[in-house]
Length: 136
Image (cartoon, rainbow, N blue to C red; front, side, top):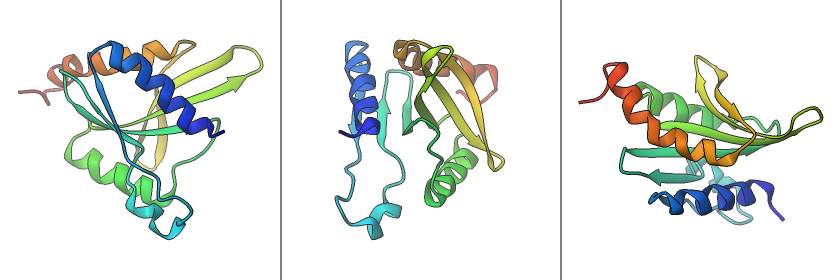
């Protein structure tokens, strides 16, 4: 059982119902030398844009090559690279977050008890791009 893979499956099941496409990037099974060539876990394609998504569970941190990928993509398109996370808390139960890695630190963009809210987040990004002057 792989908690990260399970998170991606949960996310994908909801995304497909909202007419989104999740294209996973395969893990190099057993050959961790090539792990650095896998920049993120999947590509999310929506009517609003295409997003690079890294999935994390609990308090797993980005690996060095993932930080580098995030920083490079962030410079080119600040709306393209996102981190989704699932973690269990004693007080609130399961929490899902959307995060960014910017300026060498993690920023929590949104938090919810419902994974559906993570999927809906990617429908709102197009509006943010226009508000930030990034959209055309």
